[in-house]
Amino acid sequence: MGKIYVTSDWHFGHDKDFIFGPRGFSNPYEMNDAIVKNHNEIVNEDDDVYVLGDCMLNDNEAGIELIKSLKGKIHVILGNHDTNARAALYRNCDNIVEVCYATVLRYRAYMFYLSHYPTMCGNHDADKPMERKVINLCGHTHTTDRFADWDNGLIYHVEVDAHECKPVLLDDIITELKEKK
Image 1: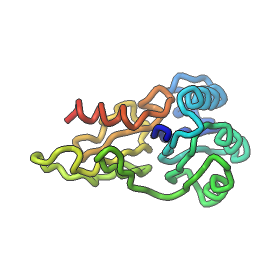
Image 2: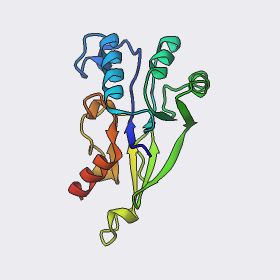
Image 3: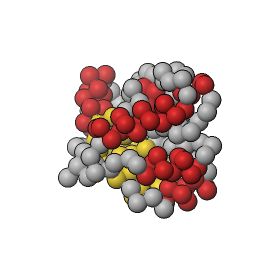
């Protein structure tokens, strides 16, 4: 059995400086190459990767080729830039095993609600352990702060902007959550 990784907001092909610039790149091609390289150095073929939206923009053909080059079994949670046409393209990729708008993932006694948008879904009952609460994993805002919305609910950001353009291991997220609580 493989590992589980989570990421979001690749924005393959997005040619606006406000996306690739803050990530440390001078153009979208450098960004695309770095995200693919980082992904394939970390992820193995039998690993599951949950991508929480906004996989690509602009050139769908080039974006799909980048996605096809990624290792792992990819689950796409659709984001605001993932149009119906793009969702249909995702469904035709051999490495994509699921395309949906949101999903629940139970792992090691934890329950995660995976969505593109930050979503208040966990209760804040102080007397309950983290394992008894619903934790939202999300992207969308391009924050570099993984806990940017923590005060609004149990919300953890997985966008590549907050993780050095790399997917994050779910076990590492759990470790961070334990340290945060």
